[in-house]
Image (cartoon, rainbow, N blue to C red; front, side):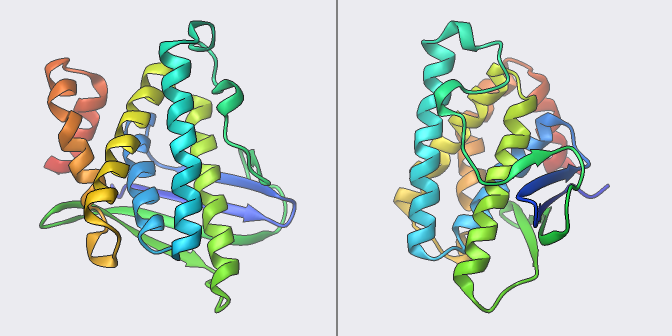
Length: 206
């Protein structure tokens, strides 16, 4: 079965995320989707998105390590990501933009294939929509994730951003940073025999 996510934006400022995977695999889907997006955005939009998620990572770590009363909640306190598009469980309004992402294998590991519709010739408009799909996907993830799963996501994103600092951005580097980030923490998860590791391992072995 293909590992796919679709994110829909509507004219009523709502968003919907449709996925055929459980939360463990959606952690992977988001990581590779984010990577594909930032490697294709213009520099200004890319810098904004990474700056925004650096703040989110700080919030995840703070909520997990310092604010124990928030650990059982589905939100990240004051650090919960804001967006103009409210997340709905089903489509509410007329569709104005759709993003489809599918995990695929290459010789170097995994990468995310994407399709955006419509793809405007006005790149700034497309970039705005694409950033909102990242927001929607993250809202979808955070709304279901347990604190420890959010912490894993924060660690993966943190490692991914460190690899961006060293390797930079280009179409040829799509999939590289998240794959290296996974390798950085994979042994720890494997030693713990976690369910997250078991789910992710299947993606590489299939």
